[in-house]
Amino acid sequence: MEGSASHGLGQWVEKVVERTKKIGRDDPRRIIHAFKVGLALTLVSLFYYFKPLYDGFGVNAMWAVLTVVVVFEFSVGATLGKGFNRMMATLLAGGLGAGAHRLATLTGRSGEPVLIAIFVFIIAAIVTFARFYPAMKARYDYGLLIFILTFSLVSVSGYRDSQVLKMAKERLMTIMVGSCTTILVCVCICPVWIGQDLHNLIADNMEKLGNFLEGFGGEYFQESENDESNNDKSFLQDYRSILTCKNSEETMANLAKWEPCHGRFRFRHPWKQYLKIGSLSRECAYKIEALNCYLNSNTTVQTSNIEMKRRVQESCTKIGKGTGKALKELGSTTRKMRRSRSADLYIISSKTAGEELKVQLRMTKLENADILEMVTVAAVASLLFDVVECTQKVAEAVYDLADLAGFKNTDAAVSPESNLVQVQPGSQHVITISE
Image 1 (cartoon, rainbow, N blue to C red):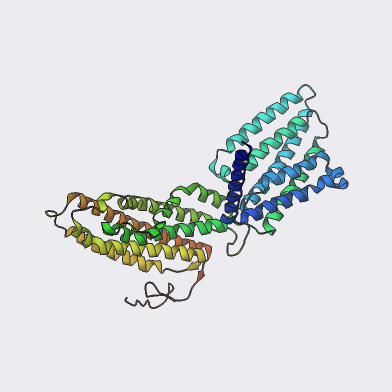
Image 2: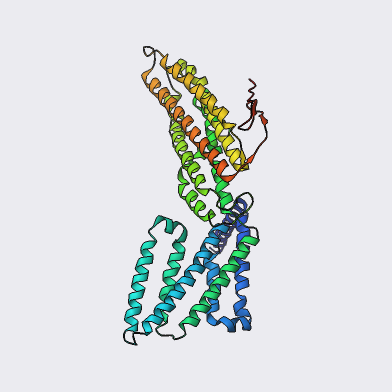
């Protein structure tokens, strides 16, 4: 029994160690963040370790420790947002609570608790209702919560403690010290910029869409005997993460607004434009989800009318590859923060292939065609047309972002995959070298 128990404990410890290693490997910044939190807590603990500091603030020094625990977040934007909200809410609520206490004392000992209760009810009701406003909830929800808490504590505790102003002042000072310490450690030691993460996420999403579309033609038109393959097919599923990242993008954009200038992200960076690109990318991802259903359908493989699929294969493949390369190019230019309209060349190529596909569908003879296969091919073609339109919208949104964010211009460059010479808008010539 003891051997079995020790063996089970050993397995559990091994699993915990492996899971810990995996978390650290997935994002090494998490390890640094843990050390940063420990450092910040150690610094504010000096209020208790050194008697001169403790004598200045007393028991209220504990608020500095509590502030570090609740304010320190993984990213700079989240930490700045929480720190600012906590400091401002404490300042305003503390002053208002002290004022409410002072006003209530003028009514005498019997009327003081009644007036304080009325103030607490009115302020708590108004501020709580303000939390339902979307704009307030997105950026100031934590501050409004702390405002209610601080106002209630200061105004109510003042009924039993005549030193309410001193208490509010000491609490405010320790909270400001805790918040400032947290912000300094978060910003100065290996900062994690949530805006940079959002920027990379949007670029990654476009590239995931591009990878699927580039490989769609080969997967859809392959012969049944070639279905079994050991090749990596992860690109057929990667796009699905885009379908569920709306809340993450909105949260990251709201937090990024708190961050100061860093790198090429200047003050008042157009974070809302990233949300627009993300929304359009999800629209495209839903079309791709529908296309993926046809990849998983036996109808696309076991068909009695192979000739029809071969007739539209070239055009469909061109559309997929063209839109895929366009989205990957848009993702690359966004990641590198440079101006380039080279994606337009791929979009134009896709539109041309789309017109060819429409002609081929019109020329199909229905007498000899399998109706089920005809419907399937028409549905796939319709979805590809929609993907081209979505790609066009994404491209326009990326170009708007480049203008709003001041992306740098790039010189003319030759794309080795497409053999196209790319030049900037305003140039006199665009030279296309045929393959």
